Amino acid sequence: MKKVYLLTALALASFGVSAQKQKLAAKEMNVEVIQKSSVKPVAQQKVTIWSNDFSTASQWAISNLTGDAQDWVISTSTSTSLGYSTGAWVDPNNTVTNENGYALFDSDAVGANNGNQDALLTYTGTIDCSMYPNVVLEFNQRVRMWQTTETIFEISNDNGTTWIQFPVNLDKATSTLYQENSQVNITSAAGGHANVKFRLRYIGSWDYAWLVDDVKIVEQPAYDLRSLSPFVAGTNNIGIEYGKTPVAHLDASYDIGGSAFNFGSATNTNAVANVNFGSGLTYNYSIGSILSNDTIAYGATETPNLAVGVYNGTYTVSSTEEVSGSALFANNTGKRNFEVTNNVYALDGIGINPTELQTTTTLGSNSFNTPTGTIFANMYHLRGGNTNNVVVSLEIGISSATTAGTSIQVSMIDTATFFADGYQSLTDLNGNVAESDYYIVTASDVAAGKITVFFPQPVALADDAYYAAVLTEVDASNTNIIRILNDETVLQPSYASMIHLIGDATYSNGNAFAIRMNMGVLGVNEETAANLSVYPNPSSDVVTIESNITEGSIQIVDLTGKVIASKTVNGVATAFNTTALTNGMYTVILTNGSTVETRKFIVQH
Image (cartoon, rainbow, N blue to C red):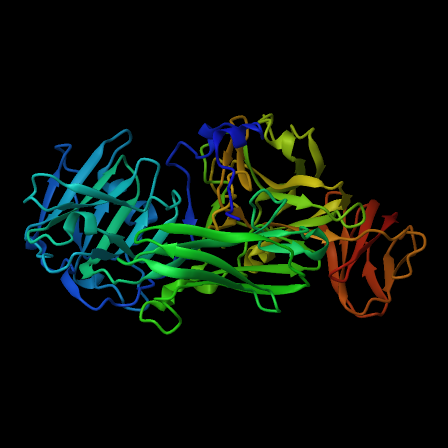
């Protein structure tokens, strides 16, 4: 069964948010890119018809359809500030010849607010493809797209009288950095023609940048089957693919599948797909014949028997003509990973995703021009029943750009309330299921790359969908900053990860914030539990905590959710000095990775 993402205006309206709110409408969104996709060249084709590495600038003509100075350049810059921090090539494998020149359109540098860009870079020679009826354009690129950006290759076979457009990067998310080797089939314009002309075209309006190098026209192979868009999503998770799911919250069934694309010039027959997650979880799907330049989806609803562990999935497509060991078989396999945990629920797959596919950016308190504050949130489906639907804390993955001293608040929000766009201030949280008090980020949090904020007491929820949210205030001085990791490896449905600008509206992130839920199992009566004892209660100077758990951790949390002290348990009594604590109630939380027990005690000097 083909996976369907509910991205239409109708689907969004069902959550109370309009289609116009899917993307932010200001380039001032500050995106910090902390990891980049590396260049991954495809297997070299047999015949290279033409190539150019931009080392000779005189071979290229610069022109501009708007009549201004917003032009392409041939550059050797290594600056990280190009294109609003798009930056120059990062090429650890030395697969791009950027040192001797590359094509650059720096939209941010040459543009202006409300500007209009339409610039051309034309190869001055001609290319003879008369002996090759099927041809492909191959190129290296580094690019960041904005809503107005169009990146196009144009081909002429009549000496420049008419040009045929081949848009690229239509699948790219806005504001995300991509560096890759790509191909586009230009057979319809160049195949079999003797006098082919070629040019690059950039259309935009004060956007980011497009860097292009090492362009080639190569013979299209007869057979080049490719695995695209692998997915594994709980059937009742409305298209959301979770990176980590607690075993108690697994769906009863999962939609598994992907697509097979025929980039070759000939038909692939008897195509099949094999999906293998190891541990005996293997699924086979028949696809049939795939015509040249055609894509066919495959998959079905399955009921895998999942236990705690990491599942590394490979999605391999093959056919009679292209089998394992074929020259171009490397791109016949796609990957999708996920983990089943005891108690961690994560939309993002950071640390789980295949390393070569991982793309991570950050967004945060200094990302938007909002006068009041911002809420960052992920949707989670709870289906474990009353004893398993217990949220102990939220963990927020952060980058080193976060500053100690920043104030945040975490919350669990009902989905209907979240989409009502009703928040006018950070104190307007009447629809929240639960919330913490303000938490001050520490230097240790920044060094660890994550913040864990406990709720004042574990939150028991009914089976339903909720948003786990982080609330940040705006700091005009820009000195108190939180930058939340954003996993862009897997495209998520629009409602999976959201951004609410206080006093404005709700927008789609389209990816996955590193906002994770630490789950527990209450089911333990405070009076009868044998695993945890706290005495004396009240305490004036020392409180002793006893547990017969040999592996786990203990935290003492105040009424705001702030962790006062923590310790790894080892089956012996632990004494905590309480003389420095103010009078009041505190909570002891014991967890061993799958269960949680709590005790309240009072400090009274």
